[in-house]
Amino acid sequence: MAAPSMSKKPELYTKDMLRLAASLPHNDRLENPQASASKRSPVCGSEMTVDLRCDGGGAITELAFRGRACAMGQASAALLWQLGIGSKQSAIAATRAGLASALSGEGEFDGLWPELAVFQSARAHPARHAAILLPFDALIAALDEIG
Figure 1 (cartoon, rainbow, N blue to C red):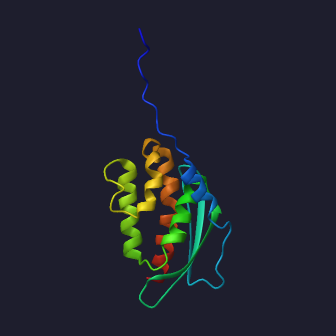
Figure 2: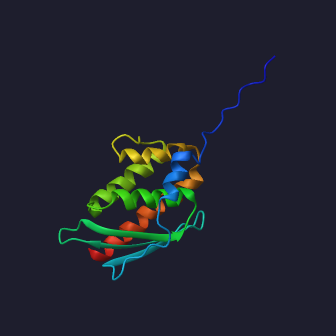
C-alpha cells in the first residue's frame, strides 16, 4: 500500500523573489530627506529604515531603503523602491492592507500591484509575513512625518 501523500508547503524562496531581493540597493540613503523612519519586526528582528521626499501634493518623488532584513523583507523593499514613486500615503496604506489580507489568505493578490504575487508562497509561512510588511510600515511611518 502506498504511503499517504503529505501536503508540501510551496517553496518559500523562489528564484523571482530572490532576484527581486538582490535588486535592492543596499544601505541606500537620500541626502537631506524630507522624512525618515525606522521599523523593527519583533517577530524576526529585521530592521528597515526609509528616507523619502514628496511633492507638494504628497506623492513620493524619491525613496531609499536600508536595513538588515531577510530576503523577503529585502524583496518587499525592492518592490516599494521600484513601484512607490508617484504614490501617496493612502495608496501605500491600501496596498499594505491588501497585501496583509492576501498573505493571511483572507484576500487575493489580484487587485494589488501584480508584482506582489511574488509573495504568494509566503501564505504558508505566517512567520515571514511581518518581514514582508516591514518596509511598508517604515514607509507609512515616514509619510506620517510629513503629514
